[in-house]
Length: 301
Image 1 (cartoon, one colour):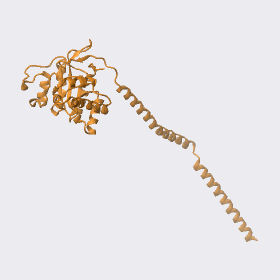
Image 2 (cartoon, rainbow, N blue to C red):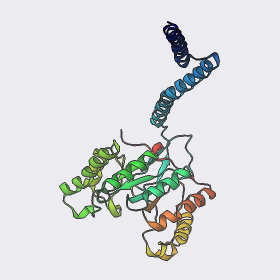
Image 3 (cartoon, rainbow, N blue to C red):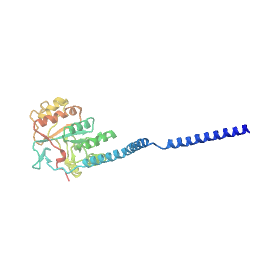
Image 4 (cartoon, one colour):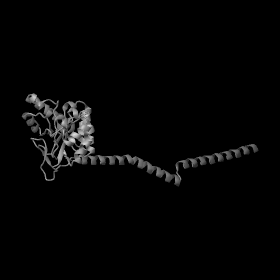
């Protein structure tokens, strides 16, 4: 009996101990899921930080969208007051508004985009100097060439038509003259979204018919007052700078200055011209000349 009683007592003690352990486990289990006040605070902070991090992309996206909207609005061309018109006989720019500066010159760059046009556009942009970039179709064969033209336009410069293949127009029959002009205007429109407003014939050699075609296409026809970078003696940045700033080209029988108010200055997409461009602009300004903005030149409505 004593043995039986002892066994009963041991069983009771064992069960009691198991019950205590079970209760302790339940308490620990509940405690692992329930946070203390300090843990709650830290968790709330973590949740807030997480919410901020999750919300950050939306804020950045909203800011980015706003910036894009602002850029889009600022990139929309506002109406510009007409200050000049191109003299049909001399190709000079003539003031048509009292606010126009008479002592101004027009910069034009032909044979674009060859190899240096984008660098030249960036230089002029940095100098806040406008220009017309006259395009040849044979320089628009690759996507890279087309992208360069887009960038020049995006920088704010006017794009002109210099014919598709740079032929001598008087040697061509009428239909080919028309194709040289219209085909390029179509391509320029496909690339930059608008048709050119200015036309310059290769070598300055127009025909009455080519001028009529250009005008029917809504383009102002122009030649130039002077230019020297296509003459071998001036295929040098320093010599070219002096010639363009003084208007003189003694090494090509131009001993007197052709620089005057309204002068239409011809340059090309060439290495030496790109190298001289900044000094040319600075030199002209030092002489008191303003660089005209082509957007202020009267065009054909």
